[in-house]
Image (cartoon, rainbow, N blue to C red; front, side, top):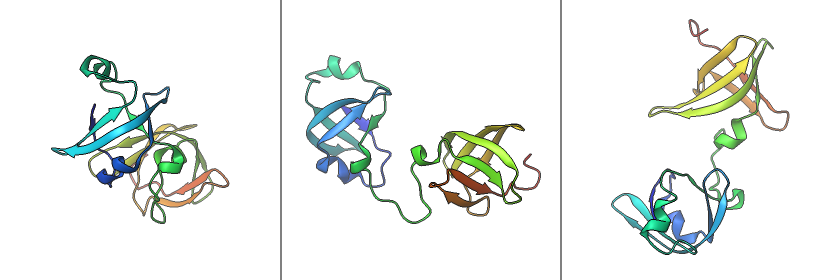
Length: 146
């Protein structure tokens, strides 16, 4: 199975024991992995041939949280951001983060709340503080954005 790499460490596929395919996170044991032309080629137990692999075309390949690479300070996985309550530095509740859009330059957080949909770029001067324990993200809305 040929996989587009979205990880900062493509070599990590060699160390994975199990991956999870699609939104239902169906587990597959990794039998082999190698890199080829910027992609990972995975051999998964239960996917024996090309037609079986075709059934999984276009789905995401996930790893368990235990296998996720550690992040630097002030970096977060999307699942850690989605669901947080966004509030301004003045304390105004903007709503919950419903989605993270990945762009070429930076992520964009989609907030659904009383003002409707707000799209905030994940810049250091916009995202002031993330407190996962309390489920809050303190933000500064750039002038002219809303």
